[in-house]
Length: 370
Image 1 (spheres, helix red, strand yellow):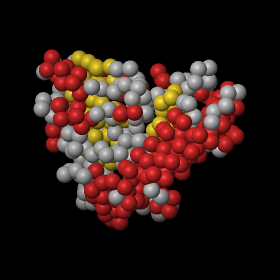
Image 2 (cartoon, rainbow, N blue to C red):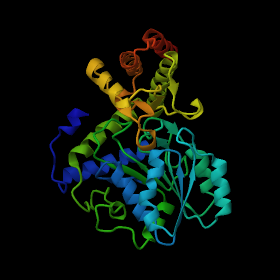
Image 3 (spheres, rainbow, N blue to C red):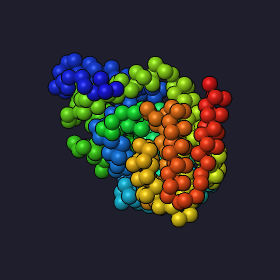
Image 4 (cartoon, helix red, strand yellow):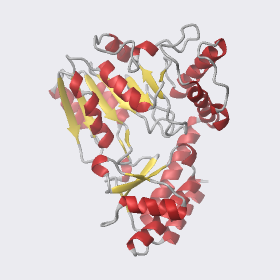
């Protein structure tokens, strides 16, 4: 990856780079297992989330947003200002969306034209059943938008298998790239919806439409692409395809399972209400009463050299998150994280957390998975 990022940064209209961009776009198509070539936008995935929101939503649309976490709920800000009516289905942020509730809402409101969902809401470490939801949405006229920013590449989610019309992700999470690109898989239905929207941006940094055919080497680009990040994306795609998607997903899942078992063995609780929908790319741990997450994370960083994340918004200071993405999706990192968390909690609270039991539980999972 670092070697790829250090390649010469060609002028974007150099024939060598135009050919490189087309080659990488076709590798991305292979990785996403789509019939159409995906779009690369040149900014981290928040760019794509906003761009899609204002490209797909028009003044006559009725939008149903599925809010099971901070990020899913937050998508409202890029949907509501542009539509005729905004609706949502909300659940507690340690739960996930019930497909039956989506089906009932779509029957109640057949005028819904767009359904949006965050597959993996990282501030909660939970996974929504997007394949089941997508199959329901596909029976209607509605366009299905899936935020898979922190799940694609780390688990079994593919755009066409979940019936998505616009599938938003990026290489900076599970594929281990720097945060500089977004990737969009768009169906014919998704393209048609954006093209029919008179307010969809064109000639703008937020335009998705301008990039539809930019992957072809004879076409060129709407504006200067991020050349170094594109080189890094190729290295990530090569690693992913060479290892094999199934093996990559299994590695993430084993790492997360080992981490969860270590967490529970130390007497801690997972944030998710059920392990049936916990994420294989993030483990969210409920904070013990009275523990300040910022202090805990600082002790882990300063004393043990381990960095974890806080919650966000409604989950802030209620949980901490251990990431299993990209380079850290290796079972040995679960051992490091569990040991550091237990030791830091012992220092912060004065209560003994059994790091030995946690570590043994991690190793038992690792050994069983070999």
